[in-house]
Image 1 (cartoon, rainbow, N blue to C red):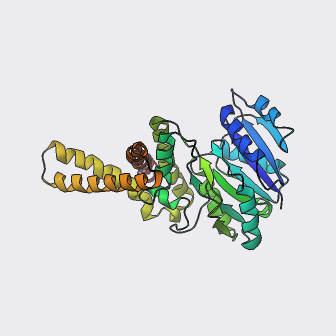
Image 2: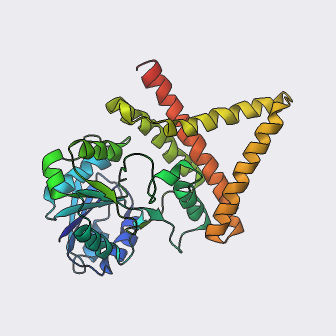
Image 3: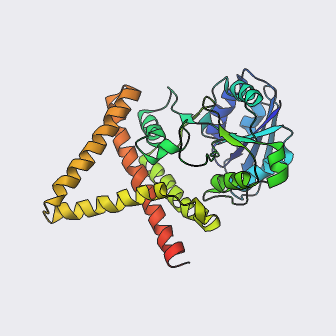
Amino acid sequence: MFFSIIIPLYNRPQEILELLETLVIQTYTQFEVIIIEDGSKLDAREIADQFKNRLDLHYYFKENGGQGFARNYGFERAKGDYFIIFDSDCLIPEDYLEIVCNYLYEHPLDAFGGPDAAHKSFTPLQKAISYAMTSPFTTGGIRGNKKHLGQFHPRSFNMGVSRKVYETVGGFKLTRLGEDIEYSIRIHNAGFKIGLIPNAKVYHKRRTSLSQFYKQLHFFGRARINIYKHFPSELKPVHFFPAIFTVGFAILILLNLFGCKLAYLGNAILGFYFSLLFLHSFYINKSFKIAILSIAAAFIQLTAYGLGFIQDFVKRVVFKK
């Protein structure tokens, strides 16, 4: 089984250096690496050249078109039986490809995804953000765990598709705003089998500041409405939770400002929720600092996603712009 690892890249040479270092030490070696530099001003050509004798590596530079279309560019040039997509800010465990290969032989899948986790080298903030994006007490809990709601949709930071899927369904139709979910839905609708490989995890750095994290999650909220515009049935009640939380928090602020007694109940519920996040994060990370930061990260995750969701719901669904 031969894999083509496809990595779109935009102005992140340091990230690709760290990612390639983790691919060099893979225990399963039947793979190639395709880097698509998507119109970067700060390119990684010199870094890619450093790995030409260590990996079966192919580096391409194209005009900027967005990550979805950059992946398509890689698909067109890939030789593998499976195409595996990573984000450039991921680190890959040395046994990742071995795990995927063994799983696919025992449980054949046409497309697959895996979970993400925090690496021991991550900063406390990166670990807190990772917690927020994977915790069962936030919406992150449905994105890559063994138990999930509804159909499993692989995410593009850790996603694989067979050559047959690509030849039948094609590549990404969207370049951003939920392009991976839209692609997964089309794969499902074409009758292919998609599944989670529970142990095929990657270490996903995500964002290095809370402000960057806010922008990313606001974008994710908008992306959910973009998916709805293409597939209305894919908007589920769970997707409204961040928006409900955001509106509820705004109401709670007003109740406190006006001294309403109902605010006491709201404060108690919010305090209980934040305590639950703190205790769970502390149990997982064994760090008081990370547990405190996890509360902030989870709050930003919910409100940023909620505001992005509300913004585009009003604009594109209510006013149909």
